[in-house]
Length: 56
Image (cartoon, rainbow, N blue to C red; front, side, top):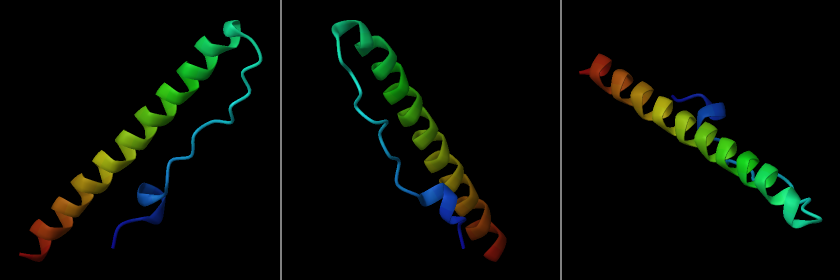
């Protein structure tokens, strides 16, 4: 069974942009969130493969 933390939904950061100058920081936080989510999914797939190969 895969750890739930690897399959948890990825929540976007709160939209707190007040001016155009705030957008770069917000976009960076979104990018980091997506990067972390992709990493978790990649680790879940790797773990799943290892578990499936171990059962065979």
